[in-house]
Image (tube, rainbow, N blue to C red; front, side, top):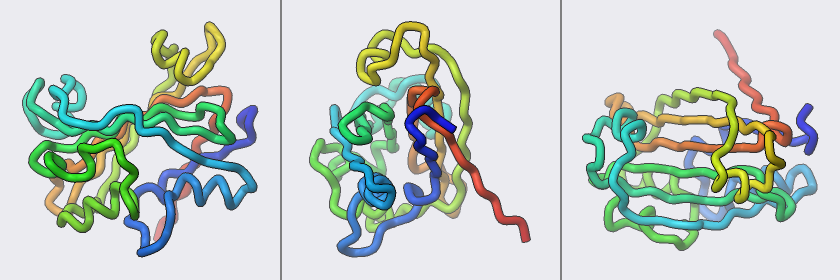
Length: 180
């Protein structure tokens, strides 16, 4: 088990929330007697980094919308998340602004006609860069987990790419798959 005792699952973050339901991170943390919050550090259009461009099916340096968040558990940094959207989907929407989105980004995407039906996640481990280390308050030499999630719609078009960085010693990822 991770040092913090936190076990992370992906499913609550992939489905639109019902009216009046709060942030899935806050709800997940509260269910365990903890406090989950997030700070939106940046939002807006940026040139697509090469890896994100390839995953979204756009040209490198084409404009994409990014939302960078610092995810906190009991006020301790737990994760850095950059979520990228094609500008054709997110440009000029609340996704391009720093305000929290009632019902969450997945709900807003659904309102805009973009519903994810297939998700692919890749997890790797490595060392953080200095910016990540400082933001996550990791010790020198402490590794991180990197999770890259691509969400595709019913036509296999990518609608969202998430790049997450988490202190490896504070996380355990859980994947539960029902067959049949």
